[in-house]
Image (tube, rainbow, N blue to C red):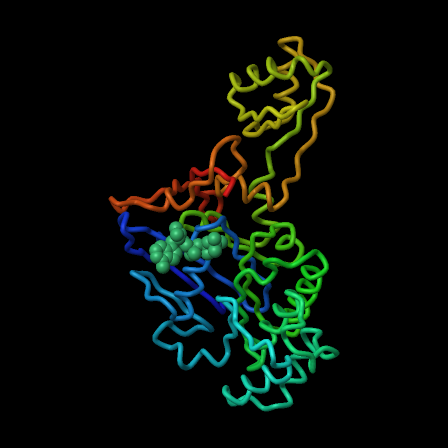
Length: 346
Ligand SMILES: Nc1ncnc2c1ncn2[C@@H]1O[C@H](COP(=O)(O)OP(=O)(O)OP(=O)(O)O)[C@@H](O)[C@H]1O
């Protein structure tokens, strides 16, 4: 497969009154041709900074980037015609219709007018094309934005949070649109917080936390790397749960205590769990491998699982006056996996 987007060791620091904020800390990303690729990360992890840097809107402090095989930002003038992007919410004139808006953009970009009708059809706005934009729902405005990025029939489409603010119906329409575009041969990169959605529509994902890649690969690979050993353990007597947690922790397992069961990982064989518990006269009523979804993997990797009474501190973990990184990296398979601290609750 050919990579249409490659980023290696990208660095970006912002100077703020409080010190230097390291937004990207050696970030890597690869997107293969023809895929829908999800770019995931908690608030403030560096997604927008990455996309803006890639598109030449801000200057990196280090690292290398290519788009369609050409080194950027140097080759941006040559590749820009084949890359459609919406990184900041575009503003449209409320008094213009979708057709007026797209015609204006087509003329300005040297795109033939017949393309306007094609993209209106593609994004499902044909029937409302003559209505004023101010009468559009948020979902329709998002689709108009996507239509504007599609005018030049790009090989690569980059969308920052395309489903932001959409209701479930709007999200479903956006999903269908993304899949249709990928089926037509276009590569689509989309950043999102809506993880269930990403799991449904993306072939592959990159997860970023504190400016570093913490996981990458196909959705199946990322899930498989984080699901192999987790087992749900229920006991005959629910009152035995705390003791069982102690026994399994002492045996070297990682144990998470849930309301009426345990989630146990880091154990080679499930039979070791049953045996360790039976030795203490604790009897198991259920032992089930847990299939993680992308959301739980994301929460585990980015350290943003809800923490009671703790406010989200992502920006503070990224603020490193001494220039140190807040991310801790370990290697799992061919991907690097890191962990950061941080709560939730913004
Ligand atoms: N212009 C700027 N000046 C200073 N710091 C900035 C600037 N832009 C972004 N940052 C900081 O850089 C880090 C990464 O921000 P970025 O907007 O790239 O994250 P993000 O993953 O896109 O977040 P979100 O999902 O909230 O949009 C954050 O700590 C943010 O506060």
